Every structure is written in C-alpha cells, then in structure tokens.
Length: 259
Image 1 (cartoon, rainbow, N blue to C red):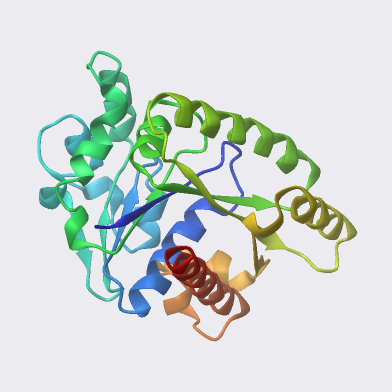
Image 2: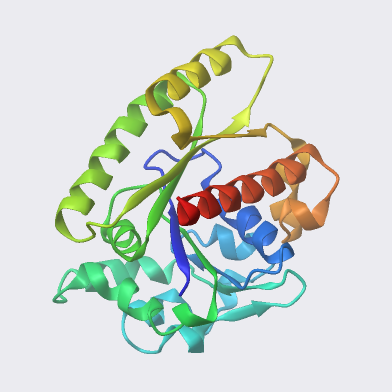
C-alpha cells in the first residue's frame, strides 16, 4: 500500500510544486513506483513534468467529479519514470461542485484507493490555500510535508497551517502526521535565513529536515523545459539537495518501521 504524502503550505511561493516534482523524480530514480498527483488548478506540477495542461482531455477534474477513475486519467511520463495525475484550471470547477456532494472531504481518498496498491509513494501537490481541494488532500494523506522559506512571514503562515492540520486530525483524518518541515530557497549568506532556521529547529526539533534546498538557478530554470532539475541538470546543487531529501525521508521511514 502506498504511503501518501501531501505537500502543503497556505503561503505561496515557497517551492511547494518544485518540491513535489523533484521529490517524485528522486524517488523514481531510486526505483520506487511513484505517483505525482497535481491537485492545484494552476497545473504547474503537470507543466513541470512536460505535460501540456491546457490540452488535457482527462484530468483530476474528471476524477473528482466522478466521470472517471484515477487509472483512466493517469499520464505515464516515461522519460521521468513516474506517473502523473494531471490537472488544469478545470479543477476549480470541481471544487465548486464538491460543495453539493455528501462526504465531499473523502472524494480524493476514495479515488486513490483504486490505485494505491500499485505504488510505493503517492505525492500530492496541494493548492496554496485552504479550500475543499486542500481538505481532500489532507484527508487522503498519511502525512504532510511542509516546505517553507526561512523568513519572518513564513513562521506566521506555519502557525496557521499547523492549526489546520490539527483540525483535520480531529475531524476527518485522525492518523494524519507531520512528515517534516523542509527549508527551501535557503541562502546561507543571509542572516535572517540562519535565524529563522535556528528557531524552527528549536521549536520542531527532528521534524525539521537536515537537508536544505538552496536557492539555485538550475532549479528555477528546469520547469520551463518541462523537467525536474534532476533531469535538467543532475549535477547541480538543487538536484543533489533533492536527492538528499529523498534519502533522508527514506531513512526516517525505515527508522520508524524498526522502532
């Protein structure tokens, strides 16, 4: 059965989609069967995998509105080695239609049960806001990975997100865990980055990944080529950091399983 990780932050521009695409790529490179679920109507994760989001005939919208199953909407990105459930702007309409549906929070969870046995990892890219789509992702997930920049406003947004996770845990998904906090776009030359980083470690301890994702031009360029940075420039600092993240995450899971 797949381990389902929602990558979420209510604050935009923190490297959430970049982390989804590159973590999926790193896990696939390690020969794990991986599914990336693009659950953001912007469709950036799909585009970052070389999928033309505007030309999609079947997408996450059709899955969420019950017009097809997940297996029918999957795109196998052969050159990347993992599958994608793509999305585009149509997904916004799905969110509105869900407001009229019973047990609407469980729609994604039930849809993923159809394919969960086929994968080791399922990574969900959440919208940068708390809405019905995000609630569906958090209900379906085993855990939440939180990417964040080391800046003052990021700490305020983190408090709000942790409160949301607690509410979801108390209502629809009692098993939801915090997978970890990931420091993204880190600049070691910036004193504020160091100060916020220290605060995170003080408050959250081992929940903060040791791996730091640096500010890196190659990471920023890769999506315009429809590739994860691991394919665009595998020797870059960004690519090596995401490989490190995948390795650290796997070590944490092995440690939990043997504890």
